[in-house]
Amino acid sequence: MGKINVTRSSMPPFEEYVEALKPVWESRWLSNRGEASLQFEQDLKQYLGCDNIWLFANGHLALEVALLAFDFRNKFPEGVKPEIITTAYTHVSTTEAIVRNQLEPVFVDVEPHFLTMDPTKIEAKITERTVAIVATHVYGFMCDVEAIQKIADQYHLKVIYDAAHAFGVTYKGNSPAVYGDAVMFSTHATKVFHTIEGGILTYKENEKLNHIEDLVNFGYVSQEDVAYIGLNARMNEFEAVMGICNLRHFDGEIEKRRKIVELYNQRLDGTDGIRILKPSSDIEWNYAYYPVLFEGYKEDRNQIQKKLEKEDIYARKYFYPITTQVTAFKKQYGSIDLPISLHASSCVLSLPLYPDLSFEDVNRICDIILR
Ligand SMILES: *Cc1c(COP(=O)(O)O)cnc(C)c1O
Image (cartoon, rainbow, N blue to C red; front, side, top):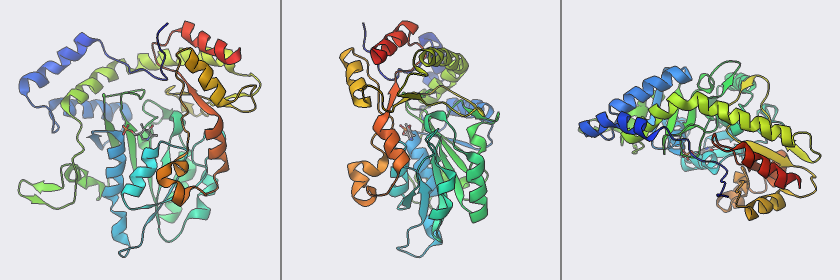
């Protein structure tokens, strides 16, 4: 039996991709927002229900550029670091995007059911220097967007979401792009919806964010002048074509994921010591991951992971370690008390989940876990 990884990229039919690529090939316009990118932007605006969108080389850069565009440091004297309320139960990218912008991450814990930012912990951390909340829609379980927005409005904070996991999710029927001032989706090959490498930023009309176009083009404002210290963060046309094709098939892929999750639930839900994480009833989910907490199960998370590995099945510890515990951040942030994040990361395992994972393999994975 073949190796089973935690995920496997969805691919459009090869002929469909090649056909869609032809105009790019013939035009020799390979990057810099050509026809394919423009088309993909239109498709995404419709799918995500947003007016403002920018395509990026990857999700991380989209987040980093969003923070850069807000120009938070400009509000304070030299040497005073603006503070960003955030969580550590996320991909290290979220924390890195903050720190690389020379902003100070202020960590709050997650709530226990969805492992997203606990809004009741935010207010105690707000100071004169707080400028924004950066929260992650972990596993596609959206944060309590209403509670977060209420606090943000009260204290005049910006809200930026890391929605790397949340493409295709809706909350009360609304796309994640509706909530917050800027929203990043990753379209990396390992995500539910991908463009090989890539990222999408959606954002509300805002004077600062309107400069994104210049920022991601090295800060050029005309052929002869550079007004901002920018960078290059473009999606290329081959990636945009992959996105156009994958979007056509996306709903079908979600449906396949749903059926796999149903089977996992049938087999594992209700087992003593195993807690399946599920989204709230307000959420129409994208079935991006299948996170399971081994809380007092007969074998611990690491043992289960090893047992699966022996059978060539590779489940992953999303998220372990939490970002305050990695070597790069531990010295500065390692002692911050985040009990729920730490607990979850000590016992979580994301089981393999991708549209063409067979029911037979799902059953085999469950057999190994329950054996
Ligand atoms: C994947 C991921 C990122 C980074 O996205 P890339 O496209 O790989 O740069 C950021 N945050 C979260 C939560 C992710 O899962």
